[in-house]
Image (tube, rainbow, N blue to C red; front, side, top):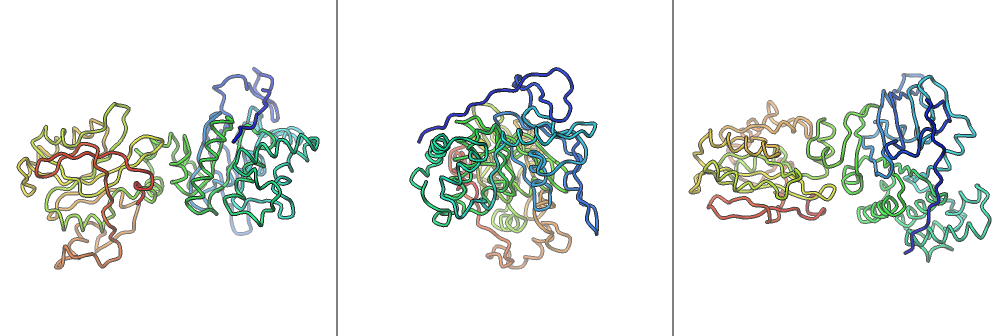
Length: 460
């Protein structure tokens, strides 16, 4: 599979503050390819005003894959339409590829400059938007036809791109003869036809099955790495962000509520909406009903410990840290996978004393164990014991309340008598598996390891 060439000539630098349509300094690598400063967009309806984008400030760095995630109505699709000015913002400043689309004093880009800018931006759509009466090759070369390219040059470019996306044998086919994944590959090839610097993908995988989604995301990563194209990817699936993105912005109610490198957002989510997205993707922390079942089966002290990559050579050694305090740990639930190529996950451990006693554990030793784990970068959540259970604070964000007061204690009380039987509440889930490779210790003193599973195993 060949890699199509990309010819790009940077615009002239300018040291003065740009007016709308003027190019900023593109020569410096420090200049973001997209910059929003306090951007607002409101839609006025008969019933109410909808603040689709509300005081949003963000940057997209050249060469990265930047994800924007949120539920329906969060404002993410409006945000991406502001980048290529399919919608014009009401106020704020927007600079795209060195061109000021909207200046802080309200001046807007001219139609001439906007046409030039859009020629440097590719767009991929959820429903493919292919011409049903045109062949695959004709769909791909359509932007080049509009740009006035000669026929032979258009054909060469289209065939090169079809080879790049793995569809060189489909040039003469029609969209109706293609699968969903193949249609999206044609859409990607078409978006790349004019050698864009920036690619906007609005829910590009939402209409695809999981396996095809992975294939399309892998192709987009190739576009980013081999062609150097910056990608802004809009999605409502955190698994997509996990698979391909370098950084992510989380949107809710028109606001960007959280942004940062993907690994940092997964490891240390600050907002409830982010925690819900992550839990739906990884499912590595027990739900309330699962925690109740674990307490039924394990009489000792339970705690959730995160396994994070802090940049050191080795992960947190649970067994070693526990041994410092005369304790043992037995992994009873959890999953560890990879995020951005780095290990991440959560495990539930039952804490016991050396010798295998889980019934009586020194409280001071347990608190010292927790403190040492936290000092090593691990987030620790105490779930208590069956007699004195404690809630995971994240349950308030990730699932509805259960029981009289919504607490784990209330749920455990509602299950008795009959605790220990298979749950009949429909909320239980089987314990997630943890591959044996990172050091922990069982209650009998033997050692086991926990290490990253595959992506598929991490999300079971």
